[in-house]
Structure formats: C-alpha cells, structure tokens
Length: 180
Image: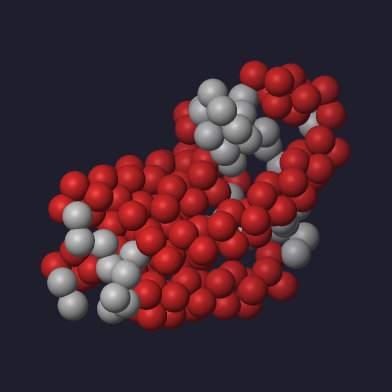
C-alpha cells in the first residue's frame, strides 16, 4: 500500500473515531437509537469500498491529481468537523428530530445548510480523485443518500421553524456555497 493510500485511510479512521467519540454527548432525538445500526453499516461499507478500490488497476497515477484529491479530502473533512463542533450537543444522527431543536445559521451553517453532508461528499470526492476514479460511483450513491437525508431534515426544520427556516433557505444553499 502506498503512502498516499495509508494517509487517506488514516484520515478517514481519525475522522470516524472523532465522530463516534463526539456522538456520545448529544441531545436525545426521537429516532437516534434506530439510526445507529444503519450508520454503522454505511461506515463499514465505505471502509470496505475504500479497501476494495485501493489496489485496482485504475488507481490514480498522476501526482497532481493525487495532491488535489488529498487537499479536497483534508479540507472537506475539516469542514465537516467544524460543523460538528459548531453544532455541539445539537448534532444528531441523520433524519432525527431533537426534543429541543435549535436553528443554527452561523459558522459553517451560514455557508450551506448541510455542511456535514457537504464535507462527507467532498471527502469522498477527494478520496476518489486521490486514489481511484471508480470510487466516484460510491460518491454518487452516497450523494443520493445524503440528498435524501437533507430533504427529510429540511422538512423537520420547516416544521420546527416555519418562517425562520424559509428565510434561511432563501439566502443559503443546500450543499455547495453559491451553487447548490
């Protein structure tokens, strides 16, 4: 395994370890317990996919593309961590409603409404660019799943904060600043 692949895997492992540790101190949600097995399965699938694609004949050989992918990976995971830290105890598993919700619109949430999802997708994109373009399939699949999660969460937020959330949506993009 190359140093690049080792670095990519180490970054993802460090990210998920932080994520699991940080998840211990959050407000209770209405469906948090049921969501955990699904999230664990997604994490396991992502790690298996990274492992399976890492040694393929389609591995990236361009140093410039590897560097670009690694930079996108690091920046994206840092963005997701910033959003997670910024949310603090308000963070929850995807598509869960909190008992005492708060509408966060500052920090990374002033750039996009779902910065954690944006960071995860960017991290996967960076991984694909740095290691294997076949992983773009996983990016597309995970992108579909995260868009579904975002849409469900958008409805939860509209229910909890009707007028305020609509104004927030008018000025803030869903996942990509200034574009989407």
